[in-house]
Image 1 (cartoon, rainbow, N blue to C red):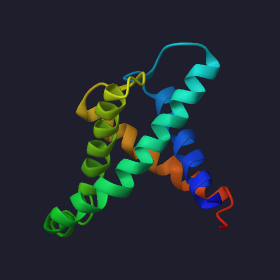
Image 2: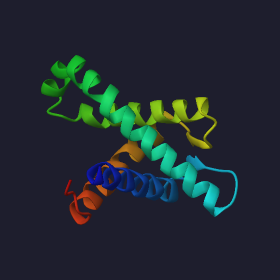
Image 3: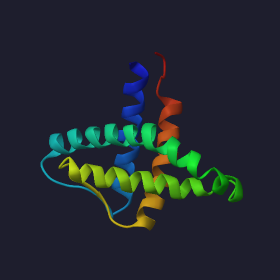
Length: 125
């Protein structure tokens, strides 16, 4: 359970950095408390998307991973971020990613920040 909480906090922090750095990734509405709650919910949604959908996409695109020496990972991460944005709209969460190239850059930022936060934060169960 502690590992799940740590990963969710890392996702929320990484999403917050991407929102802060890129003007085309937005989190709007309400005050600070409302935005923090929305950010945690989006981080949970992002975690579920990465846990359920990403392995299936990686399996189906395995030849492209081999052909591009793993660079297709940037595209897969962007698609997971766009899917999270779409699902957030369905759940009336005020998180939106505007455009594919913004999603590519956002996915790269989220990957780097999430990796760094997972190194720093404890991961014991």
